[in-house]
Image (cartoon, each protein chain N blue to C red):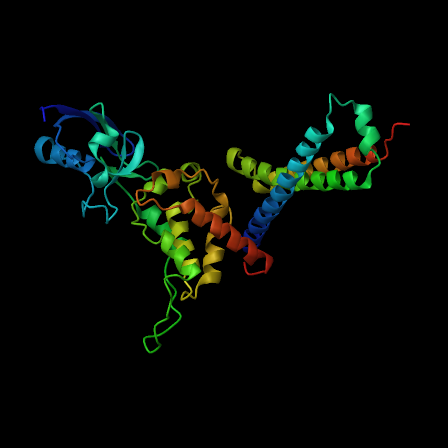
Length: 119
Length: 241
């Protein structure tokens, strides 16, 4: 293994651990909020009415999306490297595409939700 | 104790060709799997090859696959692993078979060398001894992994080693971790560079097959997790080359 690749592996491991910490915290907040907010059913329009346009929630889910986009492709990279015969360059490219896809589609959704308000 | 026989299937052959051959061995009280194998060699078929030395769980040379699991045969009682009187004894998996139950362990020990599993002294004979307190935190971490007997059981039980031949494996990495926590050692940078990466500690999936099988009840998975932490911080500081 080339010298710089060792650096990359160690840093990716740290990035995956830190993003896992953010995700664990995020999932707990997400689930607790759902349990707390649902009182005899909750419609989409009610959700948008309560949190749509709220900067705090938009930031929270924005961070969540970034954490997913960091965490998932690193795991995918390990799986592809171990389970397929793809070269490591191809795997890195695929995982970079996966990360870009997650961050773009995720942040687009969060932004759209932020601008959505029920009148 | 009433007289009864064990039915023992023993691997005969090398890694390429061979088969399990059944033997009948008289059941004895407090009988170990090594006793059974020794009986077969001494009383039934003297051409059976196997390896052992101390017979008391210190040397780590008698490891074999017993009823599908890697075990130290000298400390494995037949009553615990074969209550139905049927025993299967094969060579350790992953390692190449020399003959019958003897395996080639060169790869296993070369990986210890590759993992910088040797002590790098920092003092000469003219210096004083380092005063290391047993209660010192780093010493306690090193002591937790130091009792490895090099039997190869964790290595044989590790699925990552099975599908990734270049992976250093739990024993070599556990050894490296004990030295990372040895304050007297001067080879830390070289060691961290040797054990980082996808053939080193970062390949471990934390499945804990090594912990499950280690006859000395060590925890190589925890040692490898420690190496992942230390290498990550070294990478941040630019300590990895």
